Length: 486
Image (cartoon, rainbow, N blue to C red; front, side, top):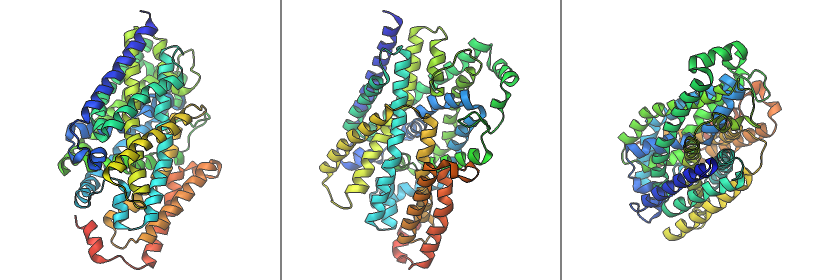
């Protein structure tokens, strides 16, 4: 068997094992909507730790992270920062969200928000914005899977076929088992990708430079601009501090508010498990260190990939590694992609049904599950079509998604902590912030100080929410007490 054949066999074995884990996971969960969306609220610490970590660190981290370290240097360190900052609020917020979920039967983010601020328009708006952010995020995962498979097979399996193969597997187990499959496959994939990342992150600098220290000494001598914060922008010019700092802030807020992560608070067996997950989560950030080392290892390499996002497979294929090792690397990269993609597909379908359809046309439990499965296919198809188009960075695409998700934070904080907030205030603030964010995304040259569009949206969102709420009639005290006195 030649090298390409062995690599293909390793990929197929990995995909088969993942499918098996996903299919078996669904046996324990009930066949209800609660079972499909919230795993019967029975996830323990191990699954919660990996479903949180593996869902956050996706193809953008395994491919986009090295791509930014390679092309933009220290700019990539923003990724290392925002994960810890974004998870910290969940120590207080997570148990409160879980308690409200148990009390009122919530399984999505918008259900909690609309429970506090009754409005079908708000529910629909949340569903639309969530879907708008999820499609490009799923696109990242599919494109990442296709990039890896195409690269390591020398183009024999093109990007379109590689993405279809990997996400065909994802769709099968998500359709069958829901969030239970997401949880247990994330656990398997999380362990796998961490091991592969550390092996490659230590091996490549050692093989190419004699070690991590000598590698950075040579980069400092020949490309010192890459090791100075805040690094470079996409055009090779110094990145502004305004852009760097607001990218961290927008991403940290986004991590807290991503609907597919927010919904995982409903799956935890207890509040203690949520708090322990938050405390342990920074250890998952260690996964990024070897990923960045791989990117920096390519800085002084005499050849260059077609796109910075290709640097990791590009180096692997030029390091004369055994075909078995290359195949395992590919499986590790697929783990990063699929462990996020499955959560996104499941989350998108759940949100659209529960928040975009159910408030207007109540469905039976069975009908909800059926429609969720149909939407998994629809969202997957939209993302797949988008993944076939080139010309964007995986990290840039993710940063764009965060602009929308940032706008959920003021509304959710108001729902959980501010007695005086009103439905009109939350709806007006969310609309105003989203419009501003989309405007500056479409016209980036107008952004002051290069600030992230999500933060610019919040600058408008917060005063609008406060002014409209304070100018309106307060909500019924007993209703508000049900949410603030948990």
